[in-house]
Length: 176
View: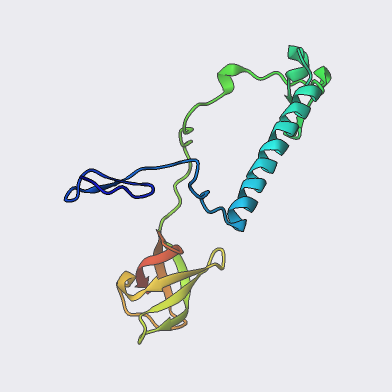
């Protein structure tokens, strides 16, 4: 024998209770103000998108010719819809175009050993600068690149190597 309750159904006194769902009399899911506003925004956005799509389709040039779709590049490298002036056309020989890295031409090899004067050298910190006697450029020198001990205003010979922050003087020797 079972006891029946409103919206609950009992199989027996000792059995489990099961809920009988009555969709018509249940309370609506709680819809907060924020949820309603987000839904309104989403619907409005969808309508605007559909409206813009309809405008684009109405204003689109249907069946544009190939010539109308072409874009040209003028002599300054800017895009334009007018074809280039044939009088400014330059004939280029395809054989003269070099693909890849051009070969180094035979150049007179400069003497890698340069001469200069020590502009500044701090022995406690182990670095300084050497002024090149040819082009008056200053090059960084570190104590690790020294062959002889140097001091300010010494005349030296050195070679250059590319470092992290520019050219560095290495293999620095005192001039005799």
